[in-house]
Image (cartoon, rainbow, N blue to C red; front, side, top):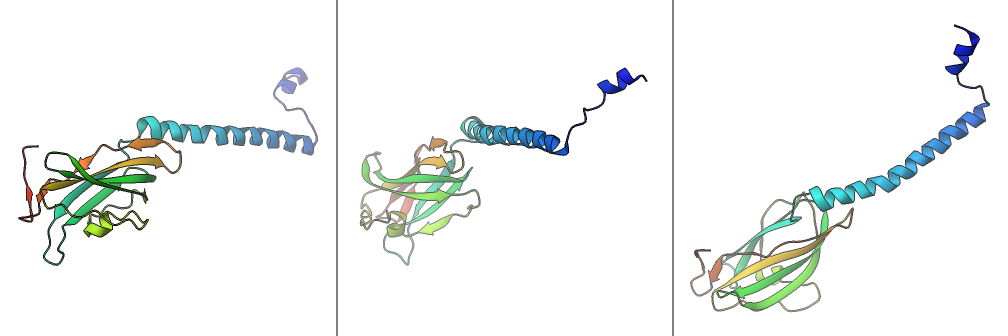
Length: 178
């Protein structure tokens, strides 16, 4: 090889400080690009590709021997780590709203066990408001959520999910054609 060709494939000799400065500048540019791109990728992923709704819940009204008011078997499962406003609605058999309570909570993907709640605890808003009285006519309990992912702040609304109609006089759930 001639001297001419070998110069093309060799880096120009510079001082060590100048080479370190080049690496620092390139590293800073890559770091800034990463800081700008990763949150955007996470937000796009949560907005368009994650399973919806972010929270899926089931609720069942149950009468037990040890508690005079009905109890609620409730399970909420989250797809992502979210903070949400929960809205609990009591409806009569004709779907008319009898009472509503709301509150906030954090939901994670780790929680997967249904839990039995007393009437008062389920409708507790944590602000001192009394829970609604248990209806004496047949009713159902519905829940829905307005949630926001904690990492990317993408929002989602869950459609209303309802229990089967509960008849308090008999302490049984009515199976309807719904």
